[in-house]
Length: 462
Image (tube, rainbow, N blue to C red; front, top):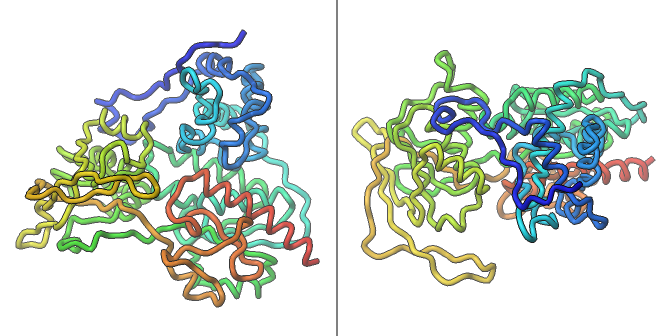
């Protein structure tokens, strides 16, 4: 009998008073009993509106039906037909604005907790399955992937399943891209990422780390080495700044640097090679998920006060509501309708205060978003000794500058068609390298689209 409860099963989480002092995962995952109960809320709609909201088109009702039957491995296989990283997506994808936003149950209550069920299935598989993936028969063709982030890994996995000899080139010393350097351990344990990557390796995907395309080797050289097509999934790792006075002071970080030190280099450990200065009071400028991640990390590193400084109201914040809720529970202070104009420094060139102005929202623009403007005579100084800029990123220009014929837009993003094809024959691109900073699942969707197009291109070229 369907479960007609209007509310989702709550996700078990660590107590905020405890978790704000550790880097252990905050969300603990559904028990089997909770997963079965939540699965019964799914009505198995005939037209499957939730599938239309998923960027990788997972057959959501089908995998939930398998949960109802307690066939968790069968559920995992259904998800894996569309997603190369189910344990990741179940944790960090904004399901509330994608698949769950289309759920019929959401009309008169809360939608089915699709993301939580996906996580349950993936975690069950990782805990109970020991069988290696079956490696497809080779088709005699090679593809190169630039970047081992969500789009690159997805593209690599799909191509490997088609029989291609796939090599992924990663600039850092560890594969995973933003999954390992950007998203904190308490939201996405790195062991989860490692397992997902091992699953891809079992399909035959080769990953070469410490390879900087444009320096170590160039795109044209890859074709010279016999690759039939190249996919660029190099992300958007170049941080943006506000260009206000004081941004070059000590104690001022880009969110990319701060999170990379914490997540990839383990700055929170006593023996870290890249420690972060102990800060008493931290301001994080921005209102997205990256800002929430940086603020929550700063709190865990021991700061007494951590502020989110955002020039619009909380209603306009692009961060997931869940992340905002968790940040508030952990004691993060929200200073909305506030904008920095200068970072103040002391005689030793350390940050020592941030001059801000209060903002107010004007009339909505053509997109419906209300633009902020400065409130008169509202200047004040926020007492901080560390500032983290989390106001966006753009792609690194290295690949563009070392590859002839690759066209980018004014933001440095590669221009690609709906199939991921760039201005160069045989060169495809997707994820943040094309869209600018976006979500993991959208990057994965772009990787899937490009893999299909690359396969058709190579077949037609024979």
